[in-house]
Image (cartoon, rainbow, N blue to C red; front, top):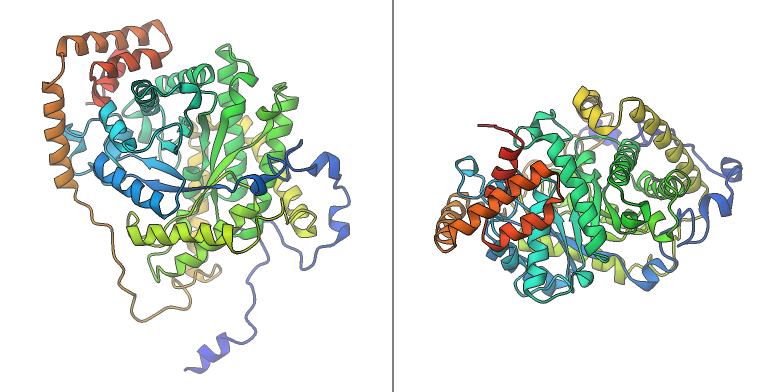
Length: 542
């Protein structure tokens, strides 16, 4: 061992006492740091306004957070098999991810899909594909979050509706979540990233169509307002995540109100999907602050009367950008820390990333370990036995106040930019993302930020781990054969008429969901439905 190595172990200390959002951390906190805290006004009892301490009175004493896991690769049949495996191991909720062709509204046999079928998620082209994924599950007893944005989410919601109808399941009993964030995959790149395949105005319209349809038909199915997890993965801070999530959500609410909906028609089933980073206390403070801001805004600005409308209900996933390819088993410690922070933050659904996700999609083994993290926290640690055990901590309450203040300040700045969509168009958001990435990378390269196994505590030889195998060529061939047979076994005249009805409905500005359902009944595919909508908008991309 060298003298330098010995010296490095002596008197180790933090480089800076700052949170990742740049909030200074005091050495000691005490009563003087929370002198302005009013218990009734700022905290309240769990399940009561302003919901800082949690959205339900008994929280995990009544029901532990849903143990959700991300599934989706290859074909619908393979995805269903992975769901069965995870369900057997104790998962009670799923996040369904789709491949790139599906996420942009293309069928698996489209030339643009070559090499991408089933790679980043499951391929879905037909109503029967979604039925195959559910197969031995039913949408009234297993919670599936359809991780899909508009315009594609309009089709998957229609598929789900048709699935329930065909199985004689009343829509008012269907559970789960339909993600519905028009900026789901827009952030982190130029606006062209998303708008090159579908017009932005059309996406925003379908966003409200979904809200309207669900408000009238799905009293138990959640709709996801914003997917701030993807936004956070670009490198933004906890404060930025909080501000951009809430700012964008309120803009969506205003669009729904402009459609003629009352806030209490749709807000009770609104939900969010957030990230939980590695800085334990800042993440806890972020969620507490977001609940408080949300409740006050819904009541005071939008006039919500239904107490359910005031609840900031959120699922969470441990941060994927915290995972390293180096020494991947270290990621188990990282995700455990994040899962514990998520639990102590009082989230409704928790999804733990697998330790191998720096290399690819999870294997069965890594999926099981991620699930066991939640189960050990829930069943062995005792942290769920009382509601909000961190309440009253001088540090937690002071940090919550500071995070709240910074979120509100940034929300005002976002408003000056015209909202999140306009900030993407102008490049303002992209500039913040690039600045955040550059700052983080420089901190790692200079050693200002320690990343164990990356810039400190290295090993001479990295361990070998099993990697999820991608078989895109095989999946593409299977799907192409399936779709050829599918189209050969339908009444193409009925399908063509349904496609024309979609074009007419776009032009007539009708709610698109009922029209899409009718098209699916006569075996129109995902790609055909999107092509019809593009044509109706006069939108060409190739």
